[in-house]
Image (tube, rainbow, N blue to C red; front, side):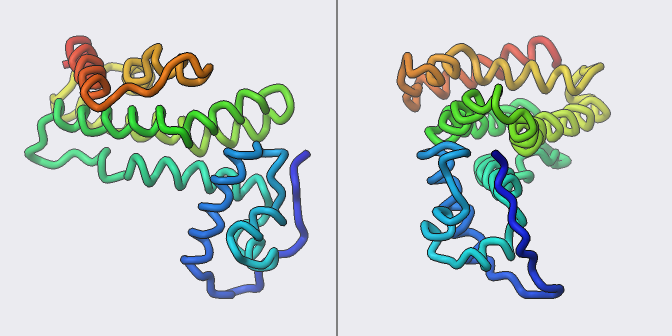
Length: 210
């Protein structure tokens, strides 16, 4: 059941960035620990140390808070600056930097936990699953699509369909290891093995699109 609330902030009411960050941090902890349905707005407000009125002044409902928590996690681990092409950039270094950040994000305990929550919600709340995909994975695909289109226009890559290339890149970086982590079959790759995997994936991608 999607939780709604009628409280809305007054016009022009100033927001406290520190309280917003505390709410997002609390939401991530509870959503991962208790799942979406098991995390109430009351519990999130208590975890964040704020009142419900303050919580609803920042986020209109639980769906909005959940999506904001997903988006904040992605933006922290994959900042938008990574997808900007400088004039003198080397495309292989750009892709390696993105690949390392994405590999670390997608295999992190937070990400694995969120993916498990979404799998559990797939048959219960498809609207929420769509919002999760749009706030996280789809935004990454869009950023990569824009990057690959720019790289193609500058002659750094030979890509006819940037979105398909973005999907290929993400699939290569995730690999089978990501599925192993989702089902609890294996532990995350250690530093040296993770770096070797990312380099192999980027080199394979460049063989196809350089």
